[in-house]
Length: 113
Length: 113
Image (cartoon, rainbow over all chains, first blue to last red; front, side, top):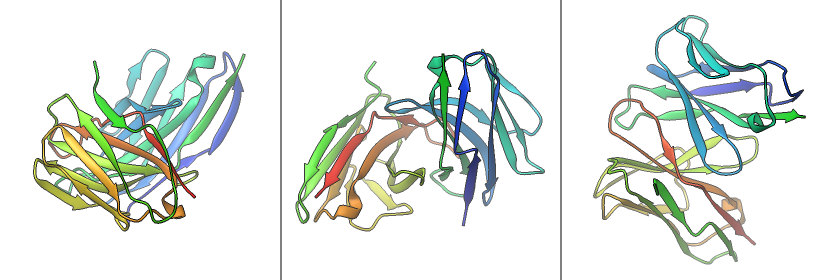
């Protein structure tokens, strides 16, 4: 059975801090790892990682995948209160016709002013 | 810029009642999904569809039925609601392929008393 585990489950920081969120996975026929940010409503897409060791960046957010050790990290530098959200990672199984995604439990990030 | 729209956004049911959640997407996506989100458990797939007229079971299909009569709509039905179905339900859609970005609706919060 596919499994994705995120850590920590929750994190409280102050504005300006740098945070690292972790995601480990065990996914049959692994194809890619996706990160989402969920504020009060719909999860919104951040990154999709397919290749090991290649960092993806978007502003203050970056992410990297390690396919040998089966994990990914999401870094947020110079955090702002607007970064407060639940961050979800999901592993994609490329062996299914519908692109099965297994989601982790999420990391709740709270950024205080 | 509607994207994925879910109705209703909130609903309270009594045990044994039935209801239907409607998901509509205007991005011409082939694939559509219904997830439920419960505290500490991430997003779990209920049912999915890879095209008009086709549906299939996900991880937690019991107690739910779905229909995809039109490409843009994906309906989730509860025939006889149970308190265990109290949850937040998310619809999502994407382009076909082995893996890719999911576009989520804003969620429907269902409470079964």
